[in-house]
Amino acid sequence: MDRNAAVIEAAGVMIDADRLDVYRVARDFDAFASRALPRRGQAHLRDQLLRASSSIVLNIAEGCGRYSRPEKAHFYLIARGSAMECVGALDVALGRGLVTAAAHRHGRGMLIRVVQMLTKLALRHCNDARRGERDRC
Image (cartoon, rainbow, N blue to C red; front, top):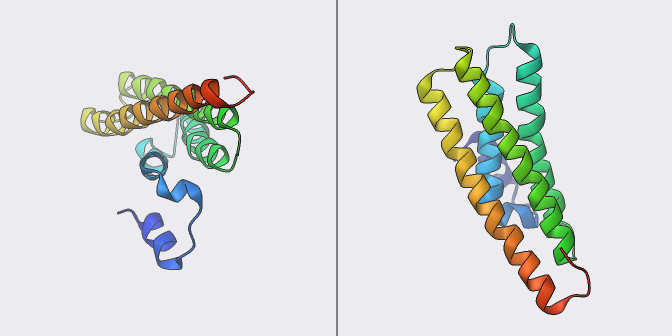
């Protein structure tokens, strides 16, 4: 468990997103992203990776706060897009020699899990919406 998860758990205050494994993995990736690229040089790539990794976490949390299934799916799909953007940023960083192959593999592994989980969440909410709600995905 990462340091942030331990602090949240110790506080005893949880939100709906805390119950999702994808939220935990996204937060772990966000912490990884903040350490993955060097702080000096390539500031634009580091900034892009940090913005996209934060967007994953924020959109999952916002999706959990929505009541409508299509709205939830919408935010999960935005988070999925941000995860794919992070994959691209890591690939560029590897190509430029800014991350090791091991760090690249580790980060990509987390992102693949995030993308898979978000895809399933979004599809489940879209399918449920088509069966029972007026709104469409």
